[in-house]
Image (tube, rainbow, N blue to C red; front, top):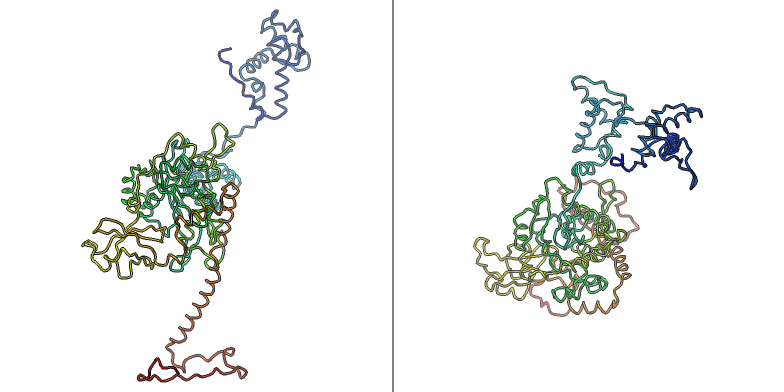
Length: 624
């Protein structure tokens, strides 16, 4: 027996009624006396009774004695029953003494026939990609399927079918959200797993999703934009995130360039957001990469492997060429399997929860969550919202403890992305990216433009530079492009563009002509001034900067609402006047003026000023 003994499943006692458990404990006292000669409550040093002494009587004799004793006490039992209970106790412990008939065990689907269960499963499977319907429709569809079965099966009662649906549809959202239902259906049926990432950049995921925020585009129309982001799996760092009306292949290449480029500090940002004041090893990294001198507290990560979906943006030739140039392995996920890149999917959802809902123009994730007349309120422009997002990533996301970055030795402690990066960089090391300014420009999207006398115009913005002088109204020499010049631009930085001078092989930087009206560019003087404003960067300052950021994002651009309302009223008034003055009806066909528009006797008439005659011989400079 010693070789077959196992730990008794004592936790199963909770499956049985208390009366049955008490009965089992009563039997345990007698079985232990048969086995050991003493009941479990015997005092220390007590001697067994002679009839149950193992040294005098065999186990079979003791079992017969116990059966006779219990029968004499009013509990008739046979010796074979005592033997059977003793064997069960030695095998299963106390659970073996419980009467199994006391636990009500019902079949998984009650009394429903297998054909009914299969029919309802088919109805639930058909609802995965269909629109959401009620439980009554699934019950009706189950009856339709059973009606065509061979042999025919009787349909159970309505209550039985509803109880069966509750069991079969658990966790499927069959009558709930269609998006959640499809997402659950695409989950892998087996064990959930993920590729381990032990170094920054070892595994990066990229994806796009609509951002639930209205922005004011250049033409004045309020539209939603798309968010494209990259997330490092090892540190959960958002290496780059950009906003565009529609994501294109060139935008993914710009995102890649931003990931391997330090995030510069901007005017107005708190000093606590700089890399020099963060947990990142700034001084050690600065000795290796001088680009980090005035960088914000966001790590620079060069991806080794990028996981993406099969969207045209990420499998385009442009993005693949950029990855090959940087030696990055591009790994497309399985089709229609968002779980292959679950980290970026969840991160984009967190951005909608943690950032978008605090922003002016937030629309909500669905139409039933959307407010009214959002387009009439204060809305950020696309460059302004991009700046807010960049600041939020540095201030909030990189300093927020992440549940996926918990210390294995101390699970109650969660690291922030910056803390995890600082810990991993000690073992993985840091190699600066051999990417110069010209390389960064090469990764940007290109277009072909003419260099006019006034400069170059892109999206109604004029860019110019003194260095463009020899190129103005000149043929570039590229016949295939009809003499146009190659221009590279950053879709997320409207301050400048770069023109390739094919005659010298160098890039010419042309700035937006009205850049001085929207804010001074960042430079050494602005940096030194910002450093003097906040000499001590602390966690409290980061918290204050975060609070100010969210309040500013929620408030929206200053006076935008009033100006928009005035502009809209003026546009309506001008349109009405234009329509009235361009009427094709004759005066006798026009409707009579309304009563409230006819002049009254109390209203004074306007002064009539005659128009003077033009004299071509008159001296225009003569004083009158």
